[in-house]
Image (cartoon, rainbow, N blue to C red; front, side, top):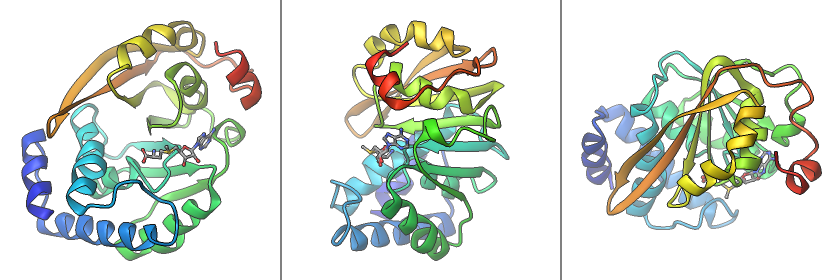
Length: 231
Ligand code: SAM
């Protein structure tokens, strides 16, 4: 697993030292151990955890400069992509955000302390936690949370003008970006790039959206509204 991780990181152009590899090993053990009693991930093989959780997350480090940046991971679940990003680039000032209290409690009380990592853990819905956090992050990241037109309303309000939102998407990235065009414009964003990278045989995509104008204060709306009437 660690060899796969080191080689995979190398293929992405990243170098992981022994301490970082050890942290990923421990993270994998703790994830799979807890997964036996709590639904954290559908992936149960260490090699697959390395590929589909760790390397997939680490790939973002090549797409933006994360050094010293304030980063929020919206809908982080068991900590992806946020925790691997923090192991890979420890200078990140990370907030992990998810509406599922049990997963957030596992992250804050068990995983992060065991790895000696510090991150702010925010439990609640993204659209409800915005007060006091509007446009305070340099970068927002999110994977497997919602279609892009809905996701933008959850994420872009957190990003400072001059910052970026990196939405991790699969094969449908192009279609989703097309569909989300009006939402992105309304929320003050502009698509900079559709980045691609390989994880094993699979090609993954990231829609990189720059924040070019402030998000109007009426967004985000309540979730029912966002879902019923996406921008
Ligand atoms: N990002 C993780 C990953 O890729 O492994 C988790 C993906 S999981 C499929 C989706 C997560 O998004 C769930 O943990 C869910 O609780 C969270 N979520 C969905 N809508 C949310 C919202 N409006 N605010 C905060 N979290 C949300």
